[in-house]
Image (cartoon, rainbow, N blue to C red; front, side):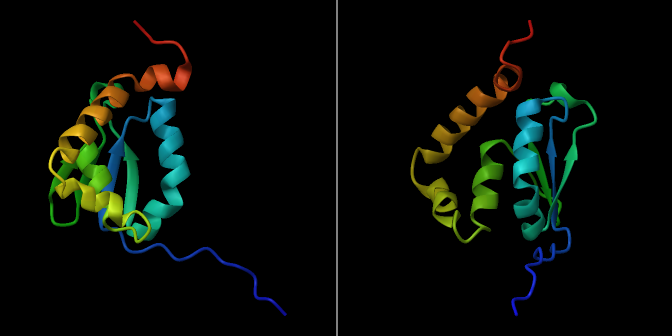
Length: 119
């Protein structure tokens, strides 16, 4: 007889990911990744001032604060299947390129979630 599959237990909280809770694009991505983030020990919390923040932030247990593309590299290195993406941070020019791509998406995040930009 097969045992029922259970969800893996979440690790103790090691960090908190702050995101724009007023943005459908941001909320959708956080909801899709919530189980994975819990396995990494990352709690999620919307910013108090929502859309006023230009990028997501990650506060780690040691008190360090990362933002934008650096969060992607940092979390990727802690995931076995995404670790090669995290290692790309040390390839010359890659960190700059990911930062620029992140900034382009983040500045248009409300257009991506609602289909129409607010002016």
